[in-house]
Image 1: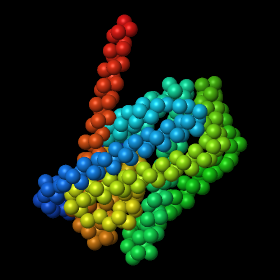
Image 2: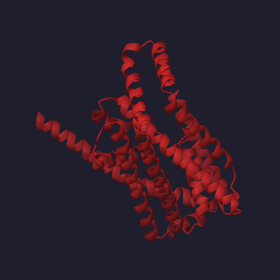
Image 3: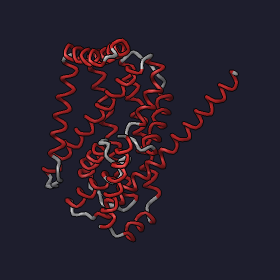
Image 4: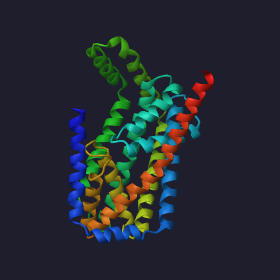
Length: 323
């Protein structure tokens, strides 16, 4: 099954990229990369750094809601490593596994650490869809028509309804968890995990102000990501209206979460191409921006690889010293 899914991801990514590249002026695309502005590239990386720092702060806030305090520096390094794994492993959840492993010793429970990451993801997705939906409404009122934006509103309403239901009906969630545990045939091993999950959700429900603050942080994260793409567009001399960016960037990020491609390659470019064409812009510009921004992020995430290697070496040295 895993092999079949991996093959499917490769086929989807390669197929979409091949199709889009066949509709692109290769020389014009290469020329945009050859003449990119290093000043704007640096500005894009600064915006991405600020986004990562804000994300680490939000993660710390959610942990504090669970009465767990972890140093911001530790979480920032963990986020860097997670970013590296997200970009260099053919998986959309590799980074989350790193984050869970890094905080489980502090939470005393992998289930609780997973709950925090899950809520962090959901708050981030809520902000992402919110920014995109709000920007699409403003763009429409300004005469900028973008394809498929109604799906943003549908996804936003479904997500809000689901989160409110889960947080507002703890008894139902408790019964659901118990039913899953009982039917699993591993009640003894899963009972504690179910209790930790309910405990974590209960603490989030009892501290709504923390969730509101985390949501504000998530909005800032989305804003910084839009700024990152706008700077990348300036670097590559790609026309990219601000309102359009506020819609296209969230949609592309949301689509990348669907595990049907290799790290979003192909799917992300198809989203940019579809939106750019609806704006009367070229597929070449869409590919230049999408691939260029992805390259900037991959270069940035190499710092996470360095942190990971240093951390591994430190652990090895400690083990040798103890021996």
